[in-house]
Each structure stands twice: as structure tokens, then as C-alpha cells.
Amino acid sequence: MSSISRHINIIIISAVLISLAASPPFQGLDPEPPDEVGKLIFIHHSCGENWLADGYGNLGRELGKNNYFVSDTNYGWGPDYIGDRTDIPNWIEWFRSSQTPVYMDALFTESGQLSGFTRTLSDPGGENQIVMFKSCFPNSELAGSPNDPPGTYEELSVGGAKYVYNEILKYFATRPDKLFIVITAPPVSDPTYSENARAFNNWLVNDWLDENGYTRNNVAVFDFYNVLTDANAHHRYANGKIEHITGRQDTLAYPTGDDHPSEKGSRKATEEFIPLMNIYYNIWKEDAPIMPPESSSVLDSTDQADDQAETQPQPASPGGQAAISGLIDDFETDNPPGTNGWEPFWDEATSTSMHCASEPEMANSGSRSLLLDFEVSPNAWATCALFYENSQDFSAGEGLTFFMHGNEPGLLFDVNIYAGSPEARETYLYTIESPPESVQGWVPFSLNWSDFHRADWEENAGQPFEKPDAVTGIAFGMNTFPDAPNTGTIRIDDLSLLEPAVLEQPEQSPGQAESAQEPMDDEPSRRFSLPCGSALALPSFLVFVCFGLRKQRMA
Image (cartoon, rainbow, N blue to C red):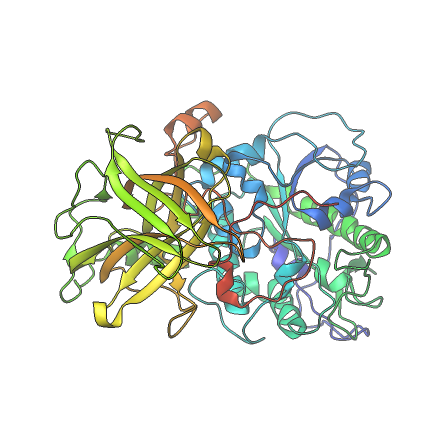
């Protein structure tokens, strides 16, 4: 059987259909509802909530009429509140991190309802078979250029977004027993990045699967973006074919006073999506396995080549002192070898104060942790830094992990990596806001090297960190929200290198998976999410340096 990509990835330029004689024959597309109840979970935020809602987009009710038992996730859902994070870069955390088995176990077994739609079907039992996922409209503001090739790390740019979808496709290949449906991010009214958004979404629909040589039937794309850009733009089943027709504009054609799609636009999307949903499901279900494969043989050749490359010995960098183990500092002693210990620095032109030292009384493990006690004046800064006498080779790890405890939520801090000499020091950072859970106990954070970007006050601001073999220092820095102080205490413990993710695991029961999984992920426990309340035009690097705010649920 042909793959879904060969059935559905058709582009028809303008509002006039053109001949598709060169495409495979479209025989046997079945837009009718399945005979048995299919279990579906939809990952979304506010636009998806509106789309599902009775009296707005009516998607939830219509899916039910077509024999799908629908559940959904939203803000506040899941392990580590992963439901908060649905921007394009966050899909790596969902589908391609060391926490993926934990998140997917929760996702596949979720049967709850967080949006206001009528659910008349009874739960048929078993796991969710269909995973729909969508980013919110700020993700249509992609930096870069329309023809940018896939990048090398996740970010809100054309190349960064292509990188994300290429990476997560490797996970989808390991789960042919699940159907994954990408819902493209809705458009915005601002035309600044509209050409990039159009090019990226056309790539998803037409080129993504083919460029990766993907031949399975378990991945499909619905161009929600395109449907909402023009009354004459469609992604639908008509006349025995799947049509992808673009209109005259690339911005939101169904506004509401902001960039949330209107009822009319949402209902148009529902009308066009439902027959496609049935086609996707019927094609997949015809030969879908009941259980996932037990081996990694389902991974595509590109992934296998990547895995083999990672295992090959790499030349040591000049002058780099290799880390003896994954542990960088457990804070049980004052001065790690080859350092003068953790030292405080602060903005002395203000009333800011900073104390940092390894102290007892509280620890995630052992008897001591790094205490940071700070009072940072509005718009000032303070830093607790560890500098090495010789550069360190941390390339055996994929990033940094640590545990954090705070005396209150909302404390703003940076994790800094330094490279270069003291005279030409390069600062790379990632900004975090302490989550509420850190007040009750220790919260694990894990950051990939690609999460760190050059400080905006230095040359080449926003450049990703690419020197793990030449680290000269690490720091925890305190900054402030605009015109506000930042006062509190934070403790850090068990600072270590992030071990490479292990994506393939034996089949486990939910209980076994929870007990066996290390409490870490390849992203911080709270990741930055673009708010759906207004459209933001952000430089691509700000995905990784903006504040990790937990957003309020929005109508």
C-alpha cells in the first residue's frame, strides 16, 4: 500500500485545480467514519480549545459523530506540566527526549476532557490510537528565509522548525501502532513572517515525509494554517481526491479582534478536516500493528547512521581536560579540583547583594548543596560562578542536569556556560523561572547544549553554544523582570553532564515505566511557551532566552 504521504501530500497552486497526472492514482480513499470506535488525543492550547468547543468550531462533537472518542491536553496537563509547552521547539521534549517514554505513557492512557465539547461515546478502553498535536499561532512567526534548509537545533525559524519535525519523525517511525496527525499552526494577521510561514507549512504538507524517505502510513498533516488564510484556500477531500489549494493571502482571513481564528474559520476547518481524518485513519488502520515493534529496526536509515556516528570515537580538543565522570559538582566540598570554588559577583553600582557557597541543612543527595541568597535591585544582576583553571571537555554529555529548590515560585535565574579566555570570555545562557513545585521539593532540570545561546550583550548574540569541549566556567545568574527586584534563595544540587537519551526501551507496564524512568528530561521541567493571547514577533534565539513563564489558560 502507498504511504499516507503519497495519498495526501498534493499541492495545487492558486484556487484553480491543476492536473496531477504525475502523482500516484488516488483509488480507494475512504472518507467514511470507521466502523469501530477510535481513541484520539489532541495536544493543543487556546486555538485548539476553541476549535473543539461546542458552539465554536464544533470539532469535538463532529469527531464523536464520526466514531472517535476524543480526549485532550491543555495547560497544566501531564508529567512535568508538559501540556504547558506546545511550541514547535517543544515537540523535541515530547517526542525525542529521555522523558519521551514517560510523556507518551501518560498521553496514550489519558481519557480526560479539558475542553468544552460534547462527548456522547463511551470510552472503548485501551490506549489512545491517534495523536493530534498543534502549536499556537505565534509559531507562524518563523525567523529566517522561506527556502532555508533544516537547521541543526530546535528554534522558531524555518530551519529550526524543519529540524524539529525531522527529529520527531524518528520517534513516529518506532510507533507504527499509533497514528500521528500534525495540525499546522494557525496564521497571524501581521504579514511580517507570512512568507516564511507559508513556505514552511507547504514543506510539511508536500516535502517533509518524502525528503525523509518515510514510507509508513502512520503520519499525516492537516494544513490548518492554509484553510484559515483565505476563503478560497482549502485542504479537503473533494471529487475523489485530496485538494491542497492556496488562496491569495498568507495571513489570517478569519480574525476575532486578535489572532485566534473566528467561529466561521474554525467551523470551515472542521468541515474540511473530518473527511481527511477518516481517510488518514482508514489508510493507517488497514495494516497497523496491534503492538509497537520490540526492536529498533523500524528506525529509518538516517537515524541509524546518526546513531552509528554518535558511537564513533571523536578527536579530543586541544587543551580540553576531559570530565572524569558525569558529575560536575555535588557541592559536598567547597572547591572542585582545578577551581577556586563558587564565587559571587554582582552589580556594585546598585544595592544588589549576593551570597553563594556550599552549605549544609538541605540537599537533594548527600548533606550539602549550593546556596544562592540574593537581593537583586530592579534591572540589575548577580552571578554565582565557577571558573576552571584549564578548559574542560564536556563533550561526553549532551548538556547539563541539576536539581533546584527555591523559597518561592517566580524567581528568575540564568544557567550560564562560559567559553574562551578571561580576556575574551563568551557567555551562553538559558533563562528559567522557578516553578511552584520547587518550593515543596527538588525539581530536576535538564538542558541540551543547543538550549544555550550567546548573551544578547555580547558579539554574535543568539549564536548557539557549540563548544562543549572547551568549557571554562559555569554560573547561575540572577536577573530581574523589567523594573522589578528579584529577591530570594535558591539551592542547586547534583550538577552533572546530561547523558545521551535512550529512546528504545523494552515494553513495560505503566507502573514499571514510572519507577524505572530517571526523573530528568532533555528539556527543563518548565519550558518557555509562546503565549496565545497575542502575536509576538521574536528573534529566533529568544525561544531559548525568554522567561519560562507558565501561561494562564486562555479562552
